[in-house]
Length: 210
Image 1 (cartoon, helix red, strand yellow):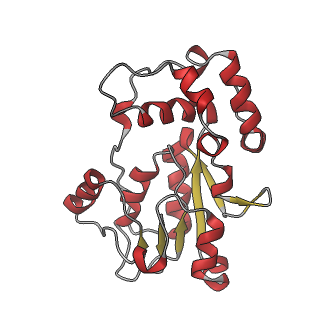
Image 2 (tube, helix red, strand yellow):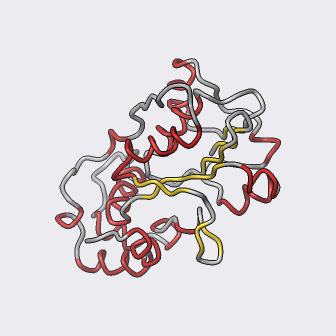
Image 3 (spheres, helix red, strand yellow):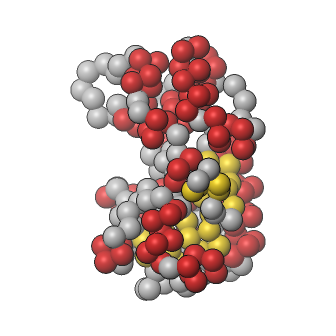
């Protein structure tokens, strides 16, 4: 999560949407007063090696990396919230569920659990991230980019904020997913139905299809 007073933007970090890679790229343009929440040590090293601004000012603010937009607004105040460009990225929930599975089970020493059984065991907040960027069922950020159109939608952010040069993306955390088949070939009907029920709002809002 980033609150940049330098460039007047707020990046709301949504799980499994290349959000850490985006966060590292955005760090390039951050200043000393900006709030950058802590990321994994390996990713923090990537940021440092690139010479970008690292984690700072987040402890005093009580903000954290996947903090909901409503909490950010309470911390920064209405003037900053209304005046800054607020954005996040969303992902097809069927595809994200698979990515979440591989991330959650990455450290196991034995064989991974069955993917459908695992996803069916997850709570709603683990499957849907709608509440990170909405309040009272209304989206409260100015722009929601799509993971599926990552580079094109990042260009929207670049143009809106007037960065002096394009964002430089790095590849973070993508190495854990083993099965790259389409989600319709991985998830069973029970899994599909549960995700459709829990993620009905974002599926409808962004016209995601099975």
